[in-house]
Length: 243
Image 1: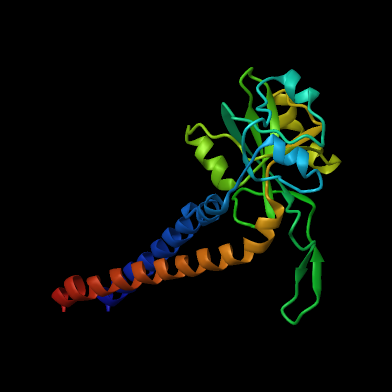
Image 2 (image 1 turned 135 degrees about the horizontal axis):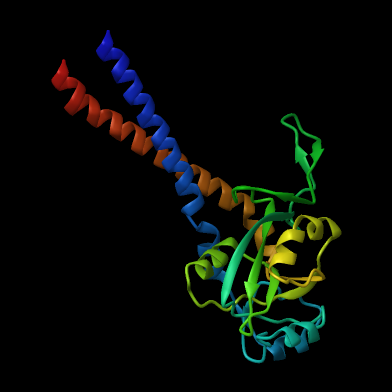
């Protein structure tokens, strides 16, 4: 009887650890950035000037695109200008804004709209694809500015990789976001007027669901592979010997 209890406890621990590993895999598996990089097209300044009505946010910065390095260059940039930045350093905040492509209302199981989503909220973990994190990036002259970008790109920069951001524009910081980011803004001496927005909304909208389903599906497979494999090996080599 005592051995059966021990066996159940051990099996429960194995299942919990397998679940935690699968959850960790879901966050580490950077499918979003992998798919994004494969379709990324380079756009130069001449193309932008010839096609003013086209939205190039999120595309790869080509020849002639201003690479902002100083506070003065950032302040002199207009909201209609496409720019890029090669961050010296990046810092994650725990504040997120509702993605431009996300439905402002949750969906009920039986159809129809549910509760209204928060336009801005704080999260400990980057798990919700409907929200995009605010980052603080450092320019070459030491100036800090706010930015929003693909989370995979942010992770590369956080690991010390030199990475030039996709094309972006200055967008206004909402009063709610400004309030939630107030301590970070004050501590890091950041302008609270604009954010550098570098996310390709059209691509994200068409791929967000696919990315979630693939990552979730692979994570489920990882969970069962580890759990079933571990339990099978234990039955074969541990519990069988005791029997």
